[in-house]
Image (cartoon, rainbow, N blue to C red; front, side, top):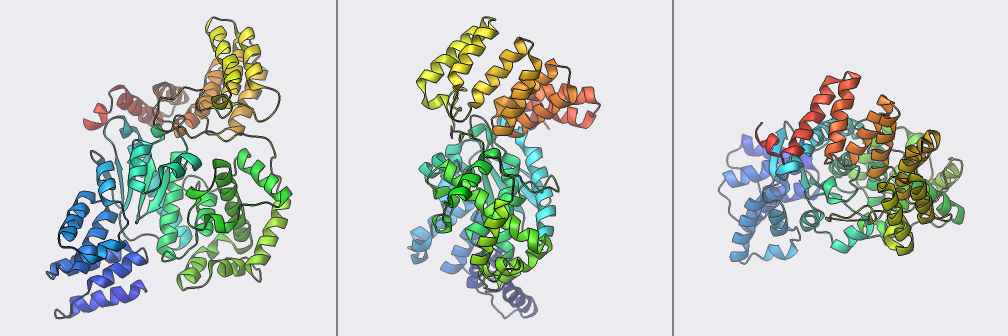
Length: 520
């Protein structure tokens, strides 16, 4: 159903007092992801005094999508008490979400709202609002429009509370590392504090907002492969004119898949990437669809995105629309063209291990390392190296770390960080710098590598390079007071008073347990 029909109906309502708008029209708006339309219908229906079951269902669903969880639960309980038959079709986790969201505080800036837990989670607030505001500006323009309602982002302080609110099975989150979701017209993410090493949460917010825009612009008809391809490719555009680059890990997986012609079948993730078999499989699937969309848009131009959304909205096959936009006769031809194009892309085929998913625990560095977490022999050598380094014997420690790292297979990110420290202590500066560069290139989301590089750059007196590395660590894990202090000092030294003040404020929030944010 087209939302223009609902808008016309509402116009008649305002013009003709005797014309009664029906709750079903608002429910139809929700079916095409038009929450703004649904809210408008709901308010008109409730103003008319309608207390029918459809009217209450509409009230409950819109309250839930607006983030009014306790109110949605209250309506749900009333419907249950009345024996409402429509509830058999409900699957939204109303009660679980209300429970997971208890105690969260809200910050609103025009058409965006961010909710987070009290305390140190306040360090996320201002930057989350910035990401959402930039995303609304950039992606609404790219896709020819966006949601006509305030966009809500819930940041859950633990992975367990995110799982509770998302409705995803815990095993899917732990297997593939899902930390965010765009569903029910709102965005949900886990705090970077929920993962032991943090993660690139800002691009993740943008990624999920792209899903929301696509859902609105296509009336929720775009398939998963296209949504994920566009979201992955464009997730960095909120902060840069450049599209998102594949990690070395993704490039390696893609190169191997291309060589063997063994890709993840589209059918396997037609419902969600969250249900794939492993982190590696999910990483490959994302790389596939991102590069497929990249190839298509290189041929069509990004200006074709609004027309692509319109075609899908009008009921055309997404495969057909994308193929035609890219100048192919059909989707099969586009797949073959993509493979030929991909064969010319200089993919880095270097072994990189998948970082383990460690949730909601004070895990040590070893649990977050993909090799040492599963190999006690390597871990013993690494721990001996730690003891030697603590006792001021960096050369002996380096020998043990290299034993732990081994000569075959992917490198250990933790051992790369430890070896960098040893080389710096031994005044082997060129080797230390080269190793740190390699480490952050191979494992850009292993925060300790960025911290180690930042310390090294500071030791060498390379102030700008140090701030760049500290800033990268902050992007992954803003809860580290060493990082915030270094950035406050570093930006002061570089003459950037605004950024220095921002990080000083974040440091104060951390040092006061969030009390500084409450006193604003």
